[in-house]
Length: 548
Image 1: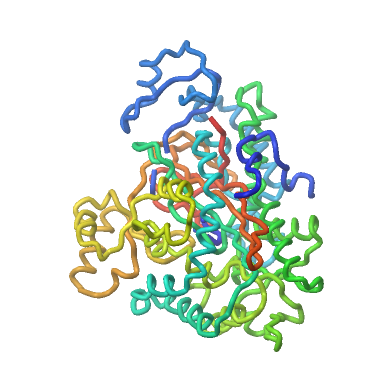
Image 2: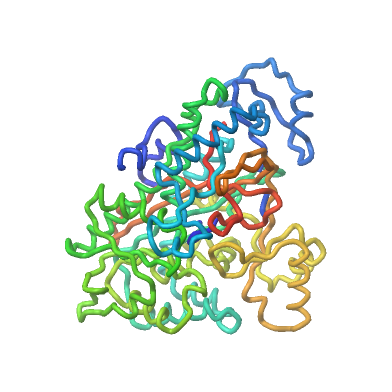
């Protein structure tokens, strides 16, 4: 979400790294990952034991056997920590040059103006020097279920009673969610129908080491960040593997093409076309201080250069001051008619410091502009709704295809309400196996470890309704992988875990589904000691995947 480190059409580019377009080059919202090492054509089988080391696996396996990539096996290790020091220095230097020249940038926290003025105080975005090995079968799985989640979000968004009932207990304990529900309720009372609905989503997963299952962390329906920078990191890694192929012996084509920024721009342009006002603009709702502005600018630049669609950037306060609603429902901001409202802010309480921002949110919802997301889509992506959808027989209310339901359920982690006393008692006894999640996006909000026990005991002692503000989720444990992380021009060797986010776009006009497809990916990698994974927040780095 935000700046932290979220299908009828063909998925070929997802499954075949050699196809698809190369974005940008031509146009100049704790849990632990099995060590899938880099391929050098020798394959081994690793026993499914959480404590079984790779060295043991190598010693116990017949390394002589040659197998194909299609076999269910894991590849021999390529450990980036063992790269020659001089070679590593050269790779790091070249990566930093590439990042600077290609716009892989964020605002520098040491520059006071870096979040307000483009071109001032820029620094390379945090990234991993080399891609992270990831099993192709799980990659395909994540891509295949993306359009199913899109359809689920759309159908849930139309069930206003389900959203209101599921989130009703939060009204007295979560002021932020309560205000969102208030706006949603007003839209229901006014019988406001969003005939054109646009979703730019990102579903985040981790690969659980013990079960070998790809499990969903969350589904982001608002401000799914990094489509621009994630596309660039994939290009950076492909470039490095080409440049150093004699030293690394890694195939650049095993890094999937990442079309996130071009696909998101295409979805925005098609939504703009559906609005059918050639003089209207796409309005990006932004924070007052935005160090991740270049990720956003990549998207807007692609939108302009490829599709000739103009965008403007406004804060919620500016929208309140400069916005008006015409009698026909048209939203006009600073003299510009708005076709599409694209939220890259508005997902956290800090985005609403006064009533001005809430007035702006209501104004946009009342308008005929296409909202990405609408208030209903926003609520459909909350943690509580995620937990409600995981209950038995709930998915069946919204999806007819039984195979689709099975595919979604397969990736659901354990999710529970704090009203479940048995689960709460178990979490108090074994807090390391759970994560407490509030209804927040943007990173840095979850509760882990002993803090889970302390928070649950405090809520029990106080006897308050605060338990309605949280859900409990199974904690996922991937295995550590060696990596080299680049931040502020300095490399760090560490052992890391990774989280895969698959972008998806959904566009519907009344009964016609115009777009429903997977749109590329974001891999966030963080040191194993970090619970949170936000990139700009300082927890993690942007990465790419190497299919094995």
